[in-house]
Length: 392
Image (tube, rainbow, N blue to C red):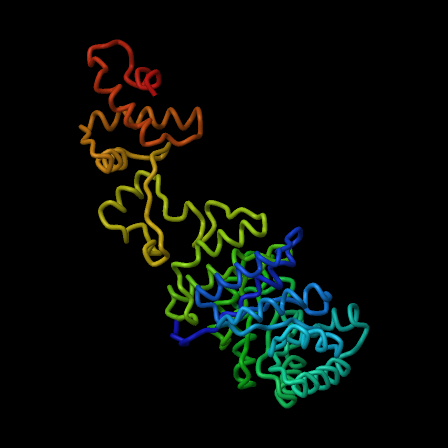
């Protein structure tokens, strides 16, 4: 993948993320999240929708008043009343959103393409007169006619917009189509281009990368992929993927991602699955005997992401799929040297334990097993696993 230099991440956890069903951030939670995003080096935050009312405006004003480094952005419709509401928040940048697909233009707005052109021109110019930096948000861009999008971008650029956000509002894109669309947009315009990908088909991260390869300069994200329906492109996945494939996002500290994920998960009331990419508790944890044996020889045999780069450590657990190499390593880490036969007997017990309980054994329990094994008489008719079961 070509190195495209610095990619700017526009995190919308505090706007689109909070639109996830049942999620409501208290002001103190929004402040903690904004500060954590700032500390992690995220350069842009979309912090809310001023048209929601006075309380939303006050909370957005409180976020602006923190004096954080990221650019603070308000999401607005193409209406002067939304711009007036945005002015009450203290933000200096607005994302003016309007439907771009014929489906939404006709059946949501009850308008036509010509009206979208006129209204976009009018409101972008009005927003600039009010002192705002303006981005044009193309809602449902992924279902819009490409030629119409290009003409709309021309209107926006002439009116003074600085960026076009291509929104895959329903999450219908695939990476191949995304690349083609952004390649066409990039050839046509010098405006900054942003991808806003939803995850209905599980492709938001892949689509975001494809957009970057096609010419996107900005990527919209949310922490943990929080958002409507299946959510948005997860910040942590986009950061990790850009790092791995030779694109450096703006100042984002990969080591801050897990704590940021935990903070948002708690505030949203949505626990992070153990196997969640990049930030899940289990992603640097290994059990399979074949994998563990390979890891102990050289971590790169079965390790693509470096846990240290994300402030994490590699863990090896003993379970149903473990091998004797893992048992020997585990006990060695506890300062106990096992013979090969002892490792095999303990492994037999570990496997039986998992089949019946599906729960891990603590280090203390494993030490107790070891001491029970040492006391077990080799000539005893009682199987070693039974003796261990009684002792542990």
